[in-house]
Image (cartoon, rainbow over all chains, first blue to last red):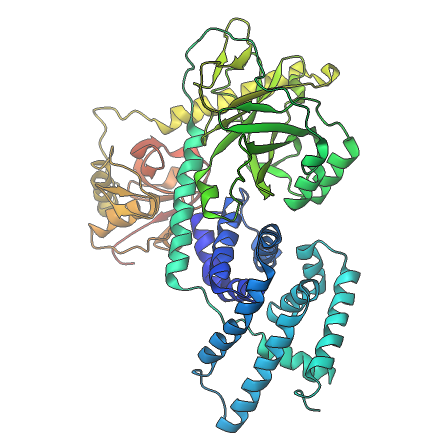
Length: 175
Length: 413
């Protein structure tokens, strides 16, 4: 990847990659590191990045790979403790953005918080496909490629995740 | 409920978090640093002092259980290369070389495999598929057992190892990973650094001695090894204090292909000689930028650009005297004539009007190369002036690389 391609990629996929890193790590410092390592790793790839072949899913799969390598070293408990903090932090930011009407915004906001917490509570093997599908809008085939698992497994994990989330969020998401 | 859930998930998980400016700046800066390192590695071409030929000696011969390390297949898998992982697990030829411990590090050769289309990521050379490659996996660990930093940790960047196949009879300073289209991926696990390295297939040299060297630093360390020009043998320099592991690679001699090998070496030599020659064009004392009819500005810009030769190259900068990259150079040259160009060469490529071919080019025209983001000022007579990494602002032949586009910049733009 050239310097310009790197600039373009950072510009274009900043939000997608960073949000993914943040949800994956549940920790701002870790997210910063992972985000940085993802782009530097991508840059070291000697070939030109192929814009037709979805640089986003390429970048996300690099992030996943680095995280997989790294997370073994990371204290799981520490992350859970910080996860809650992160949710609060993020919600503080969101509340500043304009929303339709005050009443609606409160319920929407509450719903969002509940959904995010439920997603955060999912085991990682379910959480990653959920993030890639709902946050990053990747196709199940792209998710399969990024996670290096068969498409059928992706589908079944998404199904399991939905089932769990549905149960968890029954009260909040009204018919 | 399902649709509601989908909608709720999409809304709640919309990517809202953004990396801030400073973090992105940091990435671009580190990218620039790494780039200079890579470029240096490629250009390292210097004669090797002939020292006494020393026999290969292994200071510590310990038999290590294979379970202690990841298998080459697992390393390839971790590096995200399925096909290669399968190739390694199928071949089952683990080199029986004992680990080598020199300086502060111990190195183990875990696997070696050569062949066509063994990887998910085929290598391209000048746009052509170069599928015939050699892959090796080594493990590097500290002699005292202290864990090496993870590839995602800060300390990793400060730790440099150079591992490369070497060919007996060919000067290792010239013929190594850097010249044989090599690259590598590092994976760390439990404080052990695993390196998966690849380069053009060396099996065709099976009738020569084949080695794998592992030393510290980003480039080949000529002080760490001895090369005997008469016998063609490569050996460790026993007096060298740091890491200088050298493995003998056992390759089936029937794989040797002397004809192919000779052609490959001739290609490497000729390509680098020709490039060096074209890059270091000599400007005759009598050379003058000729003003073509109707394009005085271009000639003036070319003449102006020429006076900065010898000044340094610096990535991302645009000072004609203190350091500039190629597009910063063209930008600053034209700025002197009141023409403002963007710094990005991709943007510059849209400026002015298109010139059909080099034959139609006039002094002052901008030449954009296929090597992404490289741009030069045409001087006329097939020559250019440009800011080149490692060389600084210099005069070269216009066809040192393939030209992708030529643009004429005029004040009206």
